[in-house]
Image 1: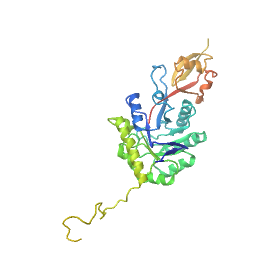
Image 2: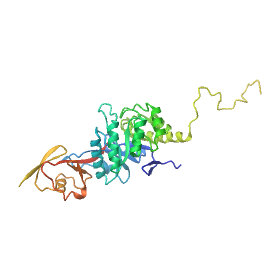
Image 3: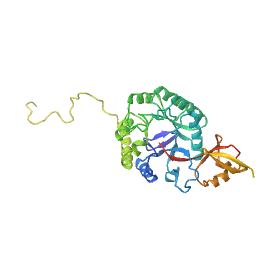
Image 4: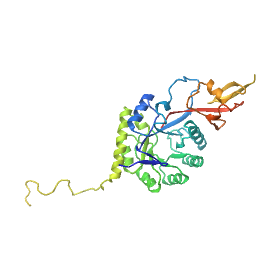
Length: 264
Length: 69
């Protein structure tokens, strides 16, 4: 089936995007990423540990840019300025790679996005030639504005980052999808496989997650569960579910010819 | 020999005057590592590491990619 996820003109087979944080070591990170089947994986940009064990392997040796589409993020940024600086560094780090994940947070407890700073950063980044996949709230008006600015994917939260609370407001996701042409990817809040399937059944173009996999008791097994659920949810969306009815009065087996019938 | 003081990732460090970015990278053991460098808020492309000389009061940020969501 030719059903590709297309972001900024590039097509991907997998609709599951995964983060690389919170794993116990690089071996587990690598195994989970492989089990997830993801082609797009997020990385964070942080200060180098100057003078500390220069022979330590780096994440990009484990997950090489030749094999994966690396999506540098701005996690931990609370202002448009810091987010833009971080992504300029990321572009230099990744040899001019321009596909990025923008997230500007509003407060350190909830990690709720600051949409005002997010909009400001999007404008600067798009003007500088970045292809911006943007993490945002599930506000359909803001989502539309971000698309109009030129973001290549809109990534609303399903619930708070790292909460595992699942899809709390499917109706807002629906409103966003009705208004936005670029891919809508649920980013944040997925807790288990059924949450990912629900997002896909709603018609989302993909799901991005980190903690749901890294925080599972067996991360590699959960990565494979997420791969299957995203595929199952996508197929169910394409297949088109039957309408919900309180009563059906339409059993699946023939109504005629049951034994002991008194009429023909 | 004149000495300059710069800041790298928030920590201060003294260097001889006329030190290039390339020399500093070497001194930090970061040659061949995938890093990106910002000097006073501006990106320094890898191609100009050898031609840029550091100045007293420079603020550098040296970053790498790490696991993140």
